[in-house]
Length: 59
Image (tube, rainbow, N blue to C red; front, side, top):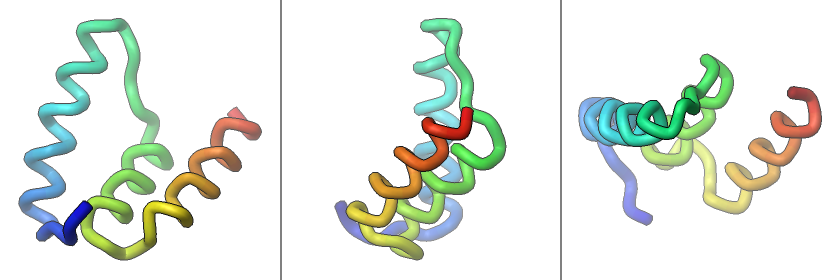
């Protein structure tokens, strides 16, 4: 996955949030921030997985 600008990440997030809303799901603020960090290259995919698992354990 390549590094994206903040604007590109926002566009992708809007599309993804609309898609999961159809299924009755949503992202909380922490989840959304984590995905954006991965999309913009602020964290690696490996770090994303680690943090996502931590979030899911504390949900």
